[in-house]
Image (cartoon, rainbow, N blue to C red; front, side, top):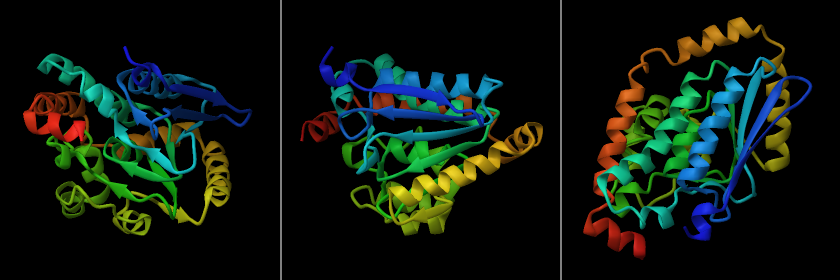
Length: 253
């Protein structure tokens, strides 16, 4: 297995106030190979079940890119539909972990979010971003399509905006657009302001009654109970399309 597929990590730390910060990293613009996807889903699930955790902050390392989405290096290694299903199911597991965690998840998007990265941001409950956090769903440009992350993104920004992002696959939309559509709750100037805003908001969340927050989370995600099945079906679509000659050529470019 190549270094790009074994590189990267996920870390989780809980402070005295009950704020658990989950951080992911990959040297290739925080792209997500299977191992990082699975570790991230497990970390979110563990934090959701941990009585010491009152609120979760989900972030990535670095300054310029929040998440570049699927690992192109790993996509090129997929040779069967089963392998494709398993890879894209990693994104399904992350989204479903966010959805089912009984704790509020605060997103921290410091830079660009592409493809699956937009899906990760959309799966949080309240997302902060800097003005540099432009978004793009690039999947169609490589012959796949944002099938797995689509339900999470569409839930946040609506069908019309989702169609714009999905079909205009080569273009970034600015952070202000993402805030207007509802993906980001707040957009600030820089990382210092981002961390200050999140610290204030997370402390506020941690001071609220856990049972009330848990009940609100259930209300927020009502109607998504079928996503375990839906996102797996969508992963199968992407897992088949990734084998096409079109996608092979696009990924090599």
